[in-house]
Image (cartoon, rainbow, N blue to C red; front, side):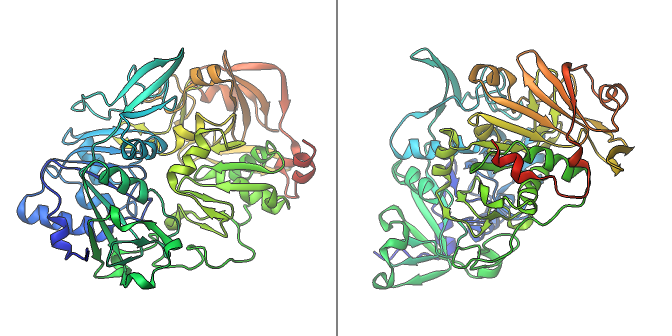
Length: 522
């Protein structure tokens, strides 16, 4: 029953043409050394070749780890991902038509693992309808050599849905903390268990092999069964990392933190106060949409400021923050520790977190935006040769009734200030965000109309509400001229509300805005 392998022997389990799936979110449950050794073998021997590789979240450190190692022409034939995680080597291969590529919603990929594990032919869901994932638009295909349809539009009992085909996985590459001789895997040092169990089940129930990278190898009698995340019957090969600090980091920023692993809690943790600038103005106005005891998801960047405002105004306890990696409660960490959280209440499997999201478990979400057309469709996933991917954006935005998109009105070298409560534009951004034509539809206004979602766009100078007729300008910041500062920097003319209001003047002053009374009165 001893399943301990030398790493080269484990890599030899991967054959030419195999379908390989990997667990992970950044470096959490990411088997970095296995990827490193797989690259070494390919560069040395030219094998394995023509792999199909699938991941739900971005793997690595956004530079040169994780999936970056295996991003080579000939090694990868087909790439299926939720997010590209700034892996420029893979992005170049996709742009050069050297790798077939699909970008599907992160939660959909998680649920495809579960469907494959259960012997189902696929995942039936409304997630992705009317977006670039819909086969009537692009089918999630990211370049011209990607031609096979992996998603179909179907009608079930009168409801329009998408059907994603289950993967047939030959090899799973996953990571845990500790293994015994039977291959029972615990994850006590991980920030969350992510999708490791689902990937293992999907491979094993397809007759595939499961390879696990760990830090520790112990006797089975010393393992607490309540700590086992992946039972040994699902595991074929266990590899002990040769250098834990290099190849088995908890996050790109931390080798190991017991706080991120959930063993300890800290006081006075938050996103920190924000100076009175465009970020604070947007976050303040967005925070005014909160309701008591809100369960929310915050996008990266400006939306994170909403938690800062809530804490500054003394209502941080009224928010339950969640992140796609599976963590609920506490304070999500950003930057090199993105995907982890301090003082989290619980760490769900990532697939279960997307059950929560897809089933409408969020009261509201605050997301960023990049390009918006006159109908209110949004692109955040692809801009020419710059490919980001959708991540959990589509899952969350198509499952949450209240959506607040937060961002500056223009992008690139934008500068502003606030003088005596008045917004002054010092330097306009070099890129317009409200434009006639967007490259991909990552968020569909048509979907909003069908499912009766409440959608707002909040910027430092104005607020829009999305209606069936398009964007309606409903609020303007003090000091802003509608024609000069708004309309002239859009490629289309929005509808101007007959009841156009001034944004709350308290937002533009140094003192607190009284958010507690605003939120608790709802």
